[in-house]
Image (cartoon, rainbow, N blue to C red; front, side, top):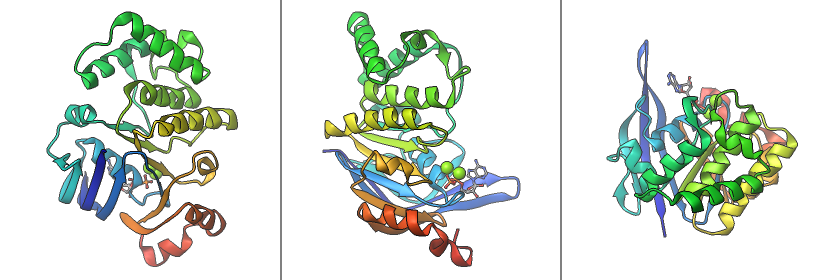
Amino acid sequence: MATLEIHDLHVSVETETGSTEILRGVDLTVKQGETHAIMGPNGSGKSTLAYSLAGHPKYTVTGGTVTLDGEDVLEMSVDERARAGVFLAMQYPVEVPGVSVSNFLRTSATAIRGEAPKLRTWVKEVKEAMQRLEMDPAFAERNVNEGFSGGEKKRHEILQLELLKPRIAILDETDSGLDIDALRIVSEGVNRLREGGEVGTLLITHYTRILRYIKPDHVHVFAGGRIVESAGPELADKLEAEGYEQYTKGGAS
Ligand code: ADP
Ligand code: MG
Ligand code: MG
């Protein structure tokens, strides 16, 4: 049973004016099989949390701990984190020029599984996963993120999730810019993954819309660089009705 434990995490980012603390003591435990929604106003540090967990070099951890099954995640390189099963689907995924989706996925799978998947079964795996996501087979031969529409980027993220089967999946604003059909397909993908009970999901979002399709077990409000309230799924309904204002008064965010 994989457990991601974040304790009193402090993270700073380097800017022209010096170092700014963005995360101010984040506490969160995500167990395999659980879905946690992290919701909060823009600029509250949600993406910073995601990037910090993935090991993005721009973010400096200045305090606190992150462990996966007791192993120190902060000591791990980006690759080691991926191999340990921590997967981040990016809010703004980068282009990878000259690398096809199919090759990119196989390289990632090789890195994570420790050996290259057999080509024949791999091609079949990719094809089936793409069918489930209602993707055109020609997509596999396109270059990663080159000219992808918003919806294609998101489907590509979910395709990675389905094939790489992480233990902890971090989805940052996976719902932003999706039309209703794409949102349904993406949500179904996440829910399929959940049914296996093997992945712990951190669903980061500004809006409650995606939570109509993906029912979280826990909802956390993120403001001013930390979690300021945690409850069950009913908290999302309250946020939908009342917004974030009560959490941002006095410049807390
Ligand atoms: P959210 O995802 O909740 O909208 P972010 O984590 O993107 O919030 O940003 C939190 C704060 O940190 C913002 O004030 C943002 O300007 C700042 N910040 C985040 N990343 C960087 C960066 N790479 N360089 C400079 N400032 C950053
Ligand atoms: Mg933002
Ligand atoms: Mg963000």
